[in-house]
Image (cartoon, rainbow, N blue to C red; front, side):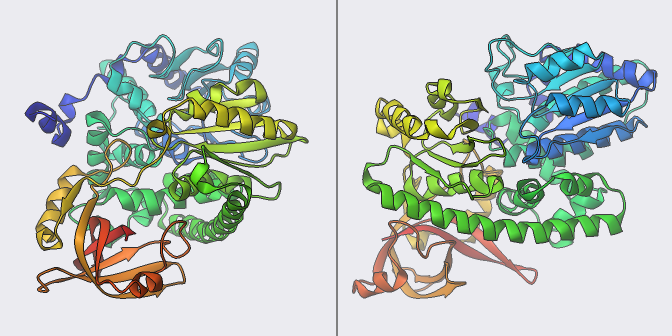
Amino acid sequence: MDAEEVERFLSWDLKELPPLTSLLDLDEAAHRLLKAIDQKETIGIYGDYDVDGTTSCALFHRFFQYLGVSVRLYQPDRFKDGYGLHVHCVEQIISHGVTLLITVDCGITDAEAADYAAGKGLDLIITDHHKDAREEMPKALAVVNPNRRDESCPPELKALAGVGVAFAVCLRTRELALESDLPCPSLYPLLPFVAIGTLCDMVELGPMNLKLVRHGLKAVKETRYEGLKKLFPPEQRKRDNIESEYISFYVGPLINSKGRLDHPEKALELLTTDGPGEAFEHFNQLTLCNQKRKAIQNEVFDEAKKQILAQTNPEELYATVAYAPHWHEGVIGIVASKLVETFKVPSIVFSESSEKGIIKGSARSAGALNMHEALSRCSDLFTKFGGHRAAAGLSMPTKNLELFKKRFDDTLRMIEPTQRKAKNHFDLCVSLDDIGPELALSLELLEPFGAKNPKPVFRAHDALLESFQILKDQHVRWTFRTPSGKRTFGGISFFFIGRWGALHPKELTAMGKKTFTIEFSLGFNHFRGNKFLQLNVSNIF
């Protein structure tokens, strides 16, 4: 980066954002919303069941609260309905008296549902950020999507998450409302929803998304929303810096957990309730659900890993493709991500769908591979298909599975290994004597971390291993000493035991060497109001 790029990267200035309100059809959407408010129509919000869709629904709910308007919120059931807007869902929405429906984080591929809505007189506004992948866009009153085929917006806007697009709609609607003397307060308190959805949907964190997330995490500290207070307890909100990892590894999975096992409504109710008691109840239900989700996920991952190891030599893998009819559909996406971490190649995990003879798959990319583009070369084998560069979902007849495996392998074989494999990456070689709290604190300026802005990883060749402790049969707590012998560091490796290709700590110590090479990121372990420097160790050899 040159000096100007560094300044943009570190900037918090919201005035430097690209024009969010420049998106196609945004004016049409905002004018129609104001008309619906003026005529006291019933407005419906229909969002996907993941974190991005849930935070988008919550954002619209809170925005319309600012305008004194109640809206009806809808989310599909992952298992009964599947992803996207469906004809039978439109029927139900119409039966509730809704005359204007807004989709969030979905809709761009749902032409049949859009046609049905138009035939029934239901005005439809589609807001989405997924690829416009079908022959024609759905016919709707407005389609607000930075990735629609004819959109010429600034390139940065194409990285908006679904909740970022929803926020743009709210911004433009507020501008027009104020011009019409309709009072509407600042939308700054809504930015926590944008931050959570953006981080958890793993969209690229360029200067625009970095600013939105930074301010969103800052706004969390002063939030008055009871659900956010439960997700960010006082000890989190009192910290100088709310870390993006807390969102990615705790808040996101908690919100997602209900939608992965049954209906996502409890997560949305948590984000939209104004009652402390109700928020406490919803939060507890999500916590229990998340514990159950973890247990199911671990079981499926273990089975999938064994299946892959039994079928082929991991050193010769182009991709991992695993299937079992009994695997829980709600966790196959996470399992695919864990398989990418394990084997460093793209992964697709299938389970049986409710439709006879059809299996549903969740795909995750590795390296620089565009997963949506790679899968599109096999799309004639699918009954449903959609997604983006990093992740995709698909359905296909069970009988096509073996043919798909071969075709997908053939596709990947034509791509350079450097483009389709994840690598153990480090940014800088250091000595442990160079590491300290000052460095860790200064690295916080680079927050938030995520896609296209990963947390810096260091490599040290001079780590003296003093001791280790195995936690819960899967994690390892390390103690390292610097070469000078003057300082010690605590380290942690999550899910280290049983990791493919990693030596057990006992095997490491049996090698008879004291000095090891470690790869790690820097962080702090917070305990009883204090924080201690901690090495998050990803590799040791």
